[in-house]
Image 1 (cartoon, rainbow, N blue to C red):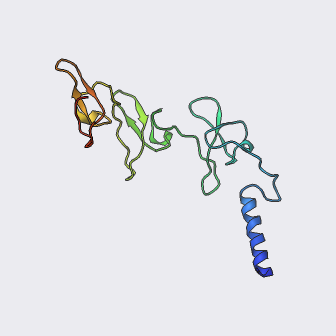
Image 2: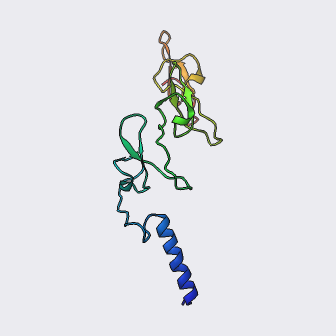
Image 3: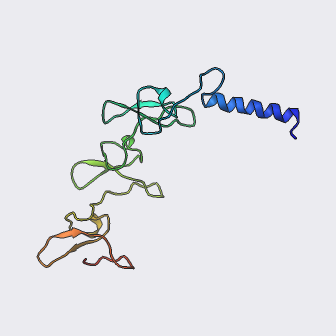
Length: 158
């Protein structure tokens, strides 16, 4: 059995954690139900207690809090157009094959992954394709990005 000292310490710890999460005696019970990325109207609707304006459209979304309990701004997911790294969730805004820039993921080494063409797009070199495979399917057809095939994932015609 725990002694009275341990019981008091546990009770104080629960009160401290409860007040940090918004459940303490100074606040009403937070009955929010909306998760990160869901539309909201007020902070109280969100599990994170953060309802932030979306930069793409005039509505608000639930966003996470930092370890310092600050609400994070909404940032664009991969594939959205951008003009600066700070607009993207990945902090990577990369120019694609046209004058526009897109949010792209980061590698495990925290490097921005370059944008590459999807399968089926026209290409002129392997480096342009997401699959790293650009070939001519027929003698007079244009070069296209195709998925790698076979057990060794080689760049072969389909």
